[in-house]
Length: 251
Image (tube, rainbow, N blue to C red):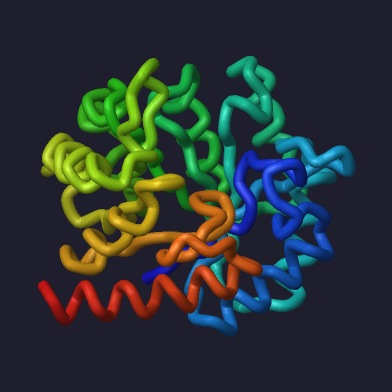
């Protein structure tokens, strides 16, 4: 399965290709699904381009995307959108339109309570386990681990001075290290492995070789495998499908 991550916390200053408004997100999702994406991950934005968990912002993005695609659509719950854990939890509980799933970064304060609240509302939880954080250990000890929709093995890191997810040379080794840390944490739950920036394509190819789900999109990289700027998310999905196929054949 290839998930498209349409925009992430990036802003228009990062790339003019980033979809920001509900209408632009809908167009990007439709094109990406037509190119082969089987799942959508989106960061709903305010009119000023900032990530938001506000119910009206989330609803507008979800409704626009669902009007044009028939695949699951998920959103972020990242702490950067609402740093206070209690306010973040209140935001999630106030959603009027629910996503099919939501990613929860397990290293962030309040993650387990947030995941429990999502599950209570019938929203699938993608457990975001960032490389070189304490997330893998926390998740392995969580009673919620067997109930998550999937595990996101994310080769990005909050560790100061690390290039865990952005360096093409080191990212695959970091990915294997992360997968080892996650072994047995959530038996039977699918794992989606992905990298970021310079590590995005090497980690995607590793996911293909290992037979794991993955994701690509302008959240993870603005560049195609040959270094050219991607025109849009659909172009990244087409390149990812080709890379996954080559990796699987070479495994």
